[in-house]
Image (cartoon, rainbow over all chains, first blue to last red; front, side, top):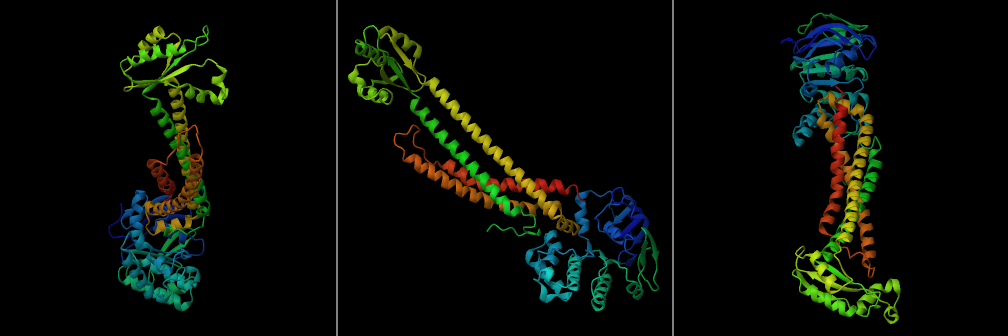
Length: 234
Length: 295
């Protein structure tokens, strides 16, 4: 059963790809609505796999994964899109569609959800302006710097006002100033109620913020509370 | 023209280059098959209409008297025929008519050579089936020995059977072409799915339903098929027009003149639309089956 006060709930979750050994073992944690967590761990520790479970790219091999009060393992396949629309994902390598302009990439979630065309472009342009790319609306992603691509990816992830925002190394390919700006953006989104999980291997980012840490080490998870962490799960 | 605005990357799988040409060729072949069907249908229909409601009475020359009494037997046969219920009119073919009929095989000097040739009486019937052919044959044999009735039915039945067999073959050919077109679209779509898997995964992860992704492939396949179909239709039009003009110039040709009937033209015009519909449906089924295996 999914917990009523938990936006994300993992109970004894294991994940394996094919016949390989488990990449995640006995993962248990809960994320409350409006919480902000860092997800840390060295390369290959399983951060991306854990995020993929949360954004419904995989079903768990065992255990319970509940996202937005829905048991992912038991969910009918045709109900997954509706749930995915409430989750914003910022992929590590951006995963922008190269043949679409920046504004069309940002507008994609709204187009998929079936909003009115004129409103969609207006909202996407507004959001791109908010992340500082108002003069690059029609630029194709290949002409953008990594920092600009990252901001397009962020705009695409938040345009649907998701309940859960998952970011995989969002500051990994940008300079310090842009990284700080992106982190401030996440703080703002968190303040208006968005639950945020930010995967990073940058310890300085984690130490500068008072948010709980989900730490992965060789596929197993431990939860640490940073000093001053006011809200969150376990 | 017919460009499809899609979230999928254009031309990444190469199908947009070869698919229209293959569809064009298929529509061209289907168009020719339709044209052949139309021609056969018209020829068979006209032969059938011209021969229905008539019989031919043949008065054979007698071997013993060298055909001396044949005029009398023709008159006797005419007398029997014209008094038979169900007969509208009866007229013997003149010697000149007979000579022109056998001229291609026996030459021009037939009449001067005095060769005995059968006399023919063209009998028009009042409706189809009101005449007692067996009774007429008996009375003719009595009044004009050596007479027989040719009601064309056996010959016509064979010709019509052949025409229908060819028509059926043409329909089967069109159906096979449609299947081949569907198979081509299916393989092109599968290639596209494999090549665009990363884009499809992104679309899925931001909430796209299978039907949304399928619509992208449907639109692209239909657009390419429509383009190919119009090209194929153009080629068919050129070929059919050329053949029609060539046939029209033939004098005294065996088949009656063929006209471009509106149902045929409508059928031809519908081919590109049918190709687009087949491509769209096939793409949808292929994509939905493929995506059902993904999460």
